[in-house]
Length: 346
Image 1 (tube, rainbow, N blue to C red):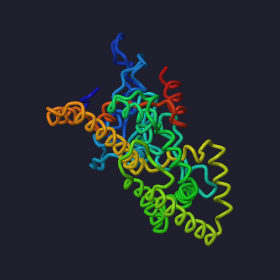
Image 2: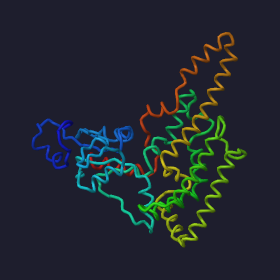
Image 3: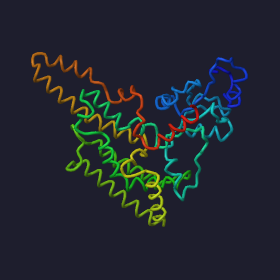
Image 4: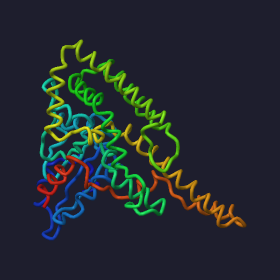
């Protein structure tokens, strides 16, 4: 079915049984936002032996408009135009972005496609799943040679501390994403830029074994920027007479299970990716320098050669992360999607 010469249609895929040999396995086409997404989704399908799964990026769909692009909006637009007929044999796997958190707001005027053959991340995007703190610790352990249970600080504690501090302003930004859904807002864009600027303060932290909080000037600056942003957000909600609506939204977040400890899973994936990689690399840099010091002390005669050999063997965080399969355990809400996939294809 790879080279049909015409657009894949669910009717064709559904009716493949009429022209398949008895021993052939039916094919399921899974459409992704981009080729890179297969790293997240492929492992979730590979154990279902009743079907042959083929993963295709949005950019290769031969649509009548002649356009070729990746992304969630591209696939959903083609679906709305009738270019796709979703079924058990043709499905989407997509980042939720802010759809999941926006859809619960009283003020949400948009819609989220609930077709059972669209599998959503629910958390913001694939980066939030890739950067599961359990996997981050395993990567740090692998690169430093320190067992995960012997690391002096675990990533979940770091992420949760950041999460608690961003909760007040970020939950308001999530609410405003729902309020301004589909219409755009320069005010919201400004709030989001200020939020990213606060996060970026964490990138300035020095290379240390542990990510320091109290007594750290960069952390204090991070807190200060968040406090200023929260004050601005409160004033805006009051001016727009939507403070009470936000309070109802906040209660819905908590009822849904989105709390100060896990709201970081809903930060824009690219922004969270930058922060986690930077902080992890700073921890790794500390261990690298410590090991270089040990080599200099224990092998003074050929230290340069030994150090060069060690540095060459020390892999990068990003490369190691890309080479590892995702860890799904511990990612909130995504377990619902995993169960949905299993229910469809078991």
